[in-house]
Length: 61
Image (cartoon, rainbow, N blue to C red; front, side):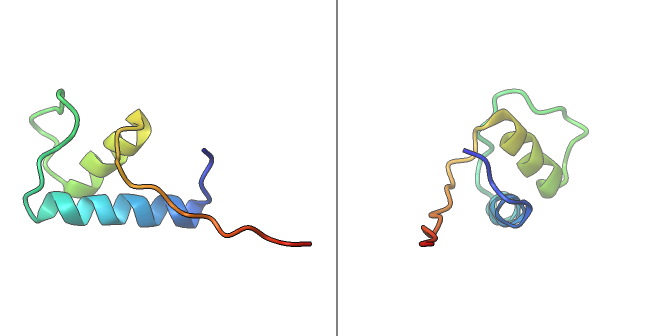
């Protein structure tokens, strides 16, 4: 599913908040030097591993 840049930012921000509050990472391989929750969330997003979805509103013409 293709997300808008705003939806992508919301998903990554929400996941980064979860990670910063102590949630475990979903990915098995994360480089040890990567400690920023936003970078980890972006890596998870790129891998398609974030369990967050966006309910998109249907636009009627």
